Amino acid sequence: KEYNVAILGATGAVGRRMIQQLEQSTIPVKSLKLLASYRSAGTVLKFKGQDLTVEETAPDSFDSIDLVLSSAGGSVSKKFLPEAVKRGAVCVDNTSAFRMEPDVPLVVPEVNPEALKKHHGIIANPNCSTIQMVMALEPVRRKFGLKQIIVSTYQAASGAGQAAIEELKKEAQDYLDGKDMQEDAKILPTKGDKKHYPLAFNLLPQIDVLEDSGYSHEEWKMIHETKKIMLDDMNSDKIKVTATCVRVPVPIAHGESVYFTVEDKDATAQDIMDVIAKFPGDVLQDDIKHQIYPQPVNAEGSRDTFVGRIRPDYENPGAFNMWVVADNLLKGAAWNTVENAEYLDKMNLI
Ligand code: A2P
Image (cartoon, rainbow, N blue to C red; front, top):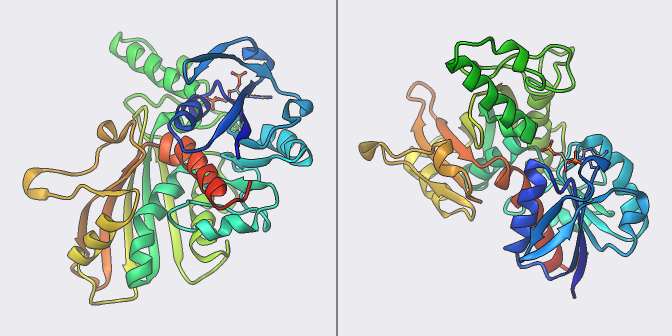
């Protein structure tokens, strides 16, 4: 079986990496169509050495397409993915548009691959910060049980798209040149809000919009997506989750400080390290004698999730701290999307 594949949002920070990840994947590609908005129609990008011209997206762009990989924003997914499904395609969507729909599987392939079987044409890729956290915690949950998660994130600018990386660089240059950074701030903390602040030499405790509950929408996603992925119930109280999400002046790769408690009070930090080291897709980087721990500059470009600084809370048996880093554009987005498609292919679900 070979597939006619389309990438929606092919010119974006994630879309370009989807092309790369698809090139290196086991998915048999018969043809590839690159889709974006009218703005970049005509742009030429390479796939397996071949020139492909980006096309403006329309409903009939999906005629005879079998597989869609999509990352062009929630409203674009809402508009076009139902059209693609109507025409017989299976879509893996990296936006938040369909994540909480009951009949849409939300999947990290190493964690809950069986959920893929329940798809009705759309599979959702979780939020980048949720993906790397469940990658680190799933082996712990399986062996020792999970009771509570308290996470603080250190999220890279690229989570807000390619333009946010450019914005950060411009601000940094202006700061060094002694100029005012405020006028450079046009996107962050989030395009969807009224005020914009510089990220260079700064920290922004807002990712996505702020809700009446007091939480940002990114924090809401981490709470409810984690429950849907691990427990198949976005409102389950079997694992308690709370989050603080912060944008940091790093271009690529998110860091997370994760505090968690397990049911098995006899579990040691070494036990936690052992199960994480064995989990596919996780790399343990925890050697304090040699100052080895995960860092964004080292994680950039890798499909893996890096975990370190694992240590017990000495005042609270069964509680631990750890530090998790992954490339938000790869495991957090493009690779997890392509990996979902690889599993769909192997499980005969396309
Ligand atoms: P375009 O290059 O034409 O603007 P990023 O997350 O890096 O900002 O990238 C967003 C991606 O989504 C780009 O490929 C962008 O294409 C695409 N996109 C944005 N709006 C639309 C739209 N209305 N229809 C199709 N693609 C879109």
